[in-house]
Length: 393
Figure 1 (cartoon, rainbow, N blue to C red):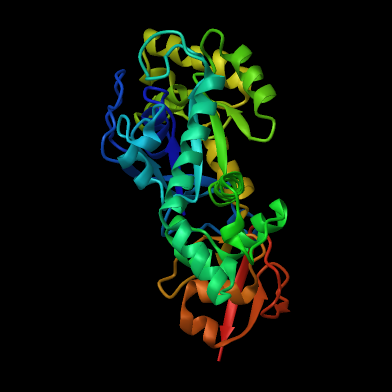
Figure 2 (cartoon, one colour):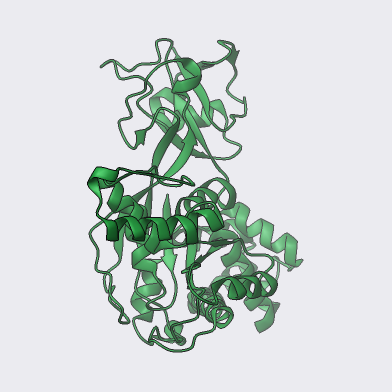
C-alpha cells in the first residue's frame, strides 16, 4: 500500500512526511525543496489484539504499546505541484509520473493561506489550491487516456472486446481494475459497446470519475494552529463537501515525536495528550511544549497527522487489519502475534490464506477464529482485527 502526499510547494508536505515517518528529509521554506520522491514508512493505529488475549505480542514489523498496535504503511512525498504541471510546468512531469503507483492521495494544504500558488511567502487561497490540484490531476489522467484512446476505442468496438477488461488491462499501471471501470460506466451511463461515439465531454467525465474512484483523496488542512486557519477550514468544507478534510499541524506532530525520542516527553503518536519529563526539559522547551498542548491538542484533540493516516487506510481505502494466529498465538520462534496484515474490506478467510502464501491458499481446509475457537469456511468474511489460524492439508 502506497499513500501519496501531494500539494503545492511549501504547503508542509515534507514536514508531514517527516512527522509521520521520522525519515531524514530536507524541510525548507523555498519551493521545490523536494526533487526526487521521498519514500518512508508510517504507521496506522489498530487496537491491539494481545490485550484481549492476555498476552504480550512481539511485532516483527511495526510496534505495540500493549494497547495500540502500529502497522506499517508506505508513504511517498513528491515534488510540489503548480498550475500547468500536467503540461510540464515546474517539476510537473516528474511529479505526476511518480504518482502512478499510489493507492490514494493525501493533499496537504496550507490552510493558513500564508503562501501563494507557487509556494512563496505571500497571500494564498486554500480553496484555489485544492481546485488547482484537482484540475491538474484530472488533466493528467485525461492525457494518459488520450494517448491511446483512438486506437483502443476502435479496437474494442471492431473486435467486440470486453470494454471494462480491455481498459483495465491497458491502464493496470494506474491501479485500474475491471470493477473500477464497470462502476464508472454504470454511474455515468456510458455506452461501452460503441466507445468511438463518445464525445470529448464523455471522455473527460469518464477519466475524471475513474481518477476519483481509483485514486481517492483526503485533504490534510495543515498549519491549523496559525492565524486565519480555522476560518479557511470552514471555507474548504463548504466548497468541497464530498472530500474528507482533516485539520492538522504537521509541525506540532514532528516536534512531539522528536521530543519523545529525546526522552523529554511521554507521547504516543495520535494521542490527545503527553506528559513532560520535568528533569529533561528547560524552561524554553516547556513553554514550547505547552503551546502545542494549548493551541493544537486541546483545541483539536490531536495533531491530526495520525488521524489522517488512519482514515486514509481504514475509511477511504476500506482496508481491515488481520492477525495471523496459531493455537499457541506464536510463530516457530516463539514470537507472539508477530504479524498484522492489511487486507481489502470484504476479504474472506481464503483470501487471507492466499495473501500469506499461494501454497497456503491452495491447501486451505478451514480457518479458526482465535477468539471463539470456532472453525470458519473459506468464504467466511473477515472483520477488522480478526485473529485467524489457517489450517492446511
